[in-house]
Length: 327
Image (cartoon, rainbow, N blue to C red; front, side):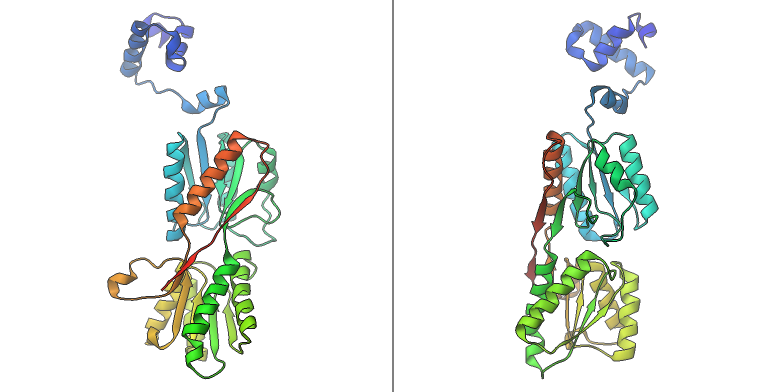
C-alpha cells in the first residue's frame, strides 16, 4: 500500500494504527487507498503487537440445552458492551473437541476464557488444565467445574435446588396419599458433581422429614433421548412412581415424552424438574421447575472474567446463583 500512495511504510502504519499522529489529508489519502485495494487491518496481529487482546473465548459442552443458550446470549451481549469479541466453541460433549478449542484460544492469545467443560466428574482431568494455569488468559468456569483446577467459577446452588424440589413433593404429592411410595430421580452421569449435589439435597430433605419414600435413581446424561429411553424402560418394568424429578430441562422433557408414549396421564403423578421448560404453556401444560436465571449467570461470568483480566493477580473465587421454584 505504501508504494501505491507514494508514502513510507512508517507513515502508512501510523495512519492505520495511530491516526492522531498523521495529518488529516494524509489519513484520508491512505484510507481511500485501503478501500481501493480491499485492505483490512489484521486485528489479531495488532492485538499481539499491543499485547491487548480483545478476544474472549466461550467453550460450552452443548448448545442443545436452552439454559446454556441463555447464558451465552448474556455473555455475548455483555462482552460487546466492554468492546470484546466472542469466539464460541460447542464441544458437543466431546473431550477432544474441548482440547482443540482450548488450544485454539491459547494460540490466539485470548484475553479470557469462559469454560463449561464436558464433565464435572472428579476423575476428568484434561491435559490442558496445566497449560491454562500457566497461560496469561483469565479463566472462569460456568455451571460445570474442573475438580481441583483452582479457576474462578459461577455455579448453581444445586444442593438447595434438590432440597427445594423434595420439600415441594412432600407438601404437594406424597402427603396426600398413604405412607411411602417411590420417587424416580432421572439424573445425569453417576459421578457428576451437579447430579450428586442435587440428589444429596433431595435425600437430606427427606431425611429431615423422616420420610420412608423410596428414591430410585436412573444415572444417564443430561440430554433428551437417553432420558426418554431410560424413563420408558423404568415405566415398563416398575410402572409409574408417585413422582418423577428430572435433574435438568432436557431430562424432564424426555421423562414427559416417556409418560406420554406409555399412555400415562402426567396428572396422575407428580412431575418436577430443574430449569425452565419453554413453550409448555402453549399447550396448557404446567410442570413445576426450579428455575435459575441463566442470563444473570452468564453476565456474572463476564464480570468475573473482566476483573481477572484487569488484575492478573486477583485471587480466584466462586459465585453461586440460587434458583427459585416456579409452579
